[in-house]
Image (cartoon, rainbow, N blue to C red):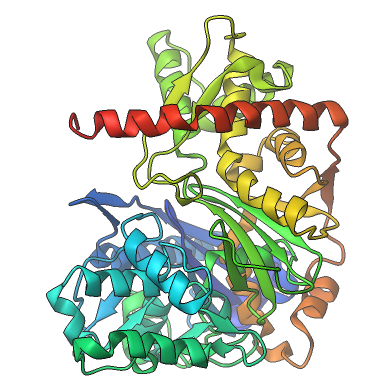
Length: 533
């Protein structure tokens, strides 16, 4: 088998996917049908600078190089092969945010990520003007907020894009974006699979009094759908990615996509009546719709699959950061007693212990808000843990309630879809590190969604694998994307399904009643501590 994999790489038939996630840049090399040949990675973290969550773009370049070098080193060690060319490649990254360049490709402002909640005024105005929900993290909200703030750089904007679009531009020189990622910049016309023309006109009319020398169409990327060619790796791009100089230019790239779109691909959720939940630093549920929703909801994003189908997204800014912090504390405690345990072992033991907890979490109430949370009206965050004197405060309930709250804000949006709009979904596919301990977070998510939750054997590969599949799809675009995934990738994939029982659903519902009742306390804590931090 290794000889076959070696031949694939030697012959330039392997496909590369790179995703810039919130805590890790991951590279995945695959063969035909999605078979993983090698992986590499680079850890990084966003920084809160002057009240803005951001990443230094120099670190973007360094992280790309490090992740690719790590992948190439594994290929060399495992197969004795040096990568010189590839069949195709693709770039994915966190959706949304604001990345503005001038005519010389100079950075005009700090990269403002999806994690920021600093565009409330702009988002409210645009939602009213366009009659379309514009969340705070969308690129157009960031641009308009910069206008409202009177930021001097706006007059010099020549190009705005997302992180995946920016990296793709560095590698190819092409100002393009996959429709899924583009749908987190500005509303999409589902029929034309392009930015909504009438809404672009509305935005230009809103901008007219400012006298800027640009039109919105001219400063955004060209929208492409899955399967369309999106340029090739240039000499400069190859030199940027591979510092060894061994990688050759000319490799075709698929349209760059956001992590939501690659998550849908990685869980085979691009067809109607399918849905997936991605849980990491943030959590979002995405359901592929059979029809438009009846009205505009501020709690729901309307985005698309990589091939342009309408998707409703229930998004929460916060998910696993706080429970990860608690696991670090437990690791410190063990070290004090001279006990050696890997981080993976700690997660597995603690998560498994939570199964012995009460169905409602024992009356405990944590909030995992490290940053603001739009769905509950928080522009800033503060992790908080509350337990009434009579609550069942033990380890199992503590961990269980921490896992419950990871899905809390997302659950509020999902309830709108399922209970008010009566959206039908047959099952939900879960992916993300929180699901690595089998049967734990999956069970709690099934109770929260009141829907069967499936974890596939390969779900841990994540978005880098998903964008690699989209790159492989370049030469199969004569087939629908759903057919390609069903027949060539997931036909023989194993999975585990958990169906929620009535007691579990009732227990999570009781937790959510407590969750909603406690939100004023969370908001008060944020306000009280503003003057002390």
